[in-house]
Amino acid sequence: MTEPVLSVRNLQVEFATRREKLRAINGVSFDIAKGEVLGVVGESGAGKSVTGLAVIGLIDPPGRVSGGEIHLSGLRIDHLPSEEMRKVRGKRIGMIFQDPLTSLNPLYRIGDQIVETIRTHANVSAAAARERAVALLQEAGIQGAEARLDSYPHEFSGGMRQRVVLALALCAEPDLLIADEPTTALDVSIQAQIIQLLKRLCRERGTAVMLITHDMGVIAETADRVAVMYAGRIAEIGPVRDVVQHPHHPYTKGLMGAIPTLGPTLGPTLSPQAERLVQIPGAMPRLDAIPKGCAFHPRCAMAFDRCRAERPEAMPAGQSQAACWLVGQGTALNGPPNAASARAPL
Image (tube, rainbow, N blue to C red; front, side, top):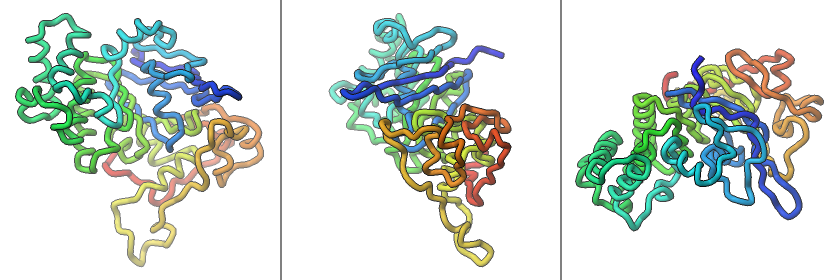
């Protein structure tokens, strides 16, 4: 087997407060291979974005990586000095944020920002960098790329700005691209275009992608594998088809049951249950109130005594792994009748 582009082992992230240290990420492990898209999904507060920021080394104090290891193509990067990490960030790891204006300086032209990034990471002339910038914008689907180099960020629509940010993230030919909710602020038609563009560019270049989102539909359309996060841990991880069609963790089952189908919602053949979306009761626990045992047990209809007392580790479940004592007992979870094949065929 080839070495993964990104290997995360037992990652822990803590935030210090006056009273105590709160653990936001607790023992997260996963790999991403070359050209693979790993989707990371879960509710707000699950730890998705913090995991991505830990990988790229952007956890701000009072937060810190307090345990575990992060390897990028064999190089351990979680303990690199800030200057060394700056060389890795941008060149070997690209980042796309939810709001493209976070990544673009409103005072500088688009072309100046892309050219500066290219020249920071490659020893090329200004003319060669500009030529490369035009090619990148064309790849990202920007019409009239050469003329648009002299435009400012506010002169682009939201979808066009996200295309520019994608070009900016890929301009140094990174090994890994972390996309944090890259389509959330866009309308559905533009979302689909950005997803297809992301898939095409990364697979043509062999870039590994960590796609962070709360949308299982985006995961089903884009990812090869999916990691479902809950309260700072991975509840389930495996191939998208297996996780979507045969969820092994009750939390994953709940997420899948909350996806609306494109089929008919009315008619005598459908039961009332099939017409309703599944709702997961309760809310994600606060960092200072994570329950003992399985963190999901207060919201789980299938919880039993062991769930309340012992924290489960990831166990083999079909082609996936799930951190659930039901898996250890061999208890099968039947997916909900509307556990969507999401928005595109798998």
